Length: 306
Image (cartoon, rainbow, N blue to C red; front, side, top):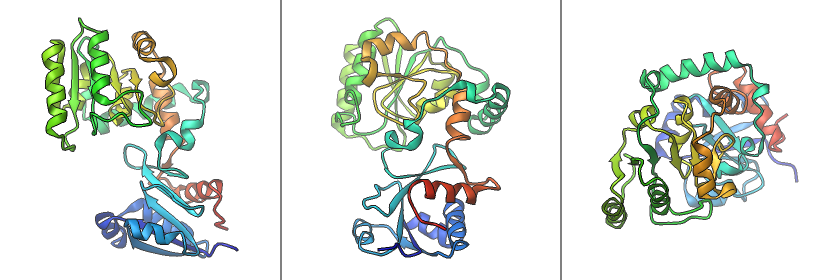
């Protein structure tokens, strides 16, 4: 059976309101691109039930960060900072198209990448990336679920912190709690216990930019702070699977000890990588050819949009 030329975009309340007001730029670009191809575009309220119902509806479905749970569904997600987006066949970032590619610095012109990265350093970090040192602590940005070892992780976040402090007993380690996360008492107790056992460990909340400006390197599951650390010239150890893994020391591949040894001598071409990862492998919502990029991506994902 052919798929009807209908696109239903499922959004939570706030982004749905913005999209209906014409203020969700990327969604509005998607709608405009497909309407020009003869599609009817519906903006719908997101819920578990609505996503399940979408599988029985003729047409295509697009979710915001939720898993595309049927053959005619895709997911969209901002690529860490505006205006860059991705449209993917999986909500798992380590399964994104860019994650499966091989990064070759020779594909990127060095001066173009440096000029681009310099501009974004100023815009994203307001000067914090202009005064960088490497004599501070090892920075361990944390996300949520600190006591859980999930399938895409090489260890739980608390176990990761302990491995860092154990392997580098004479180096200060700064664990950064995410300011938007709500941590349980059990999680805080586990961190307090680590601080009691390891005098080189300090726990803070937020302060990502200050930490990136002074740290030696970053150790994370898959926090965006590790990607932002590339703007500061800081290499990363990754305990979790993610889409920006190409120039990091990956614990899944190397094991923790080899990853810790490797990261201390890593000098990847950060600017070329950031340009490749973002400009060459994401959709720029404010680009003149954004709608063409959207249609080309949807074709690549198997949608009949013509």
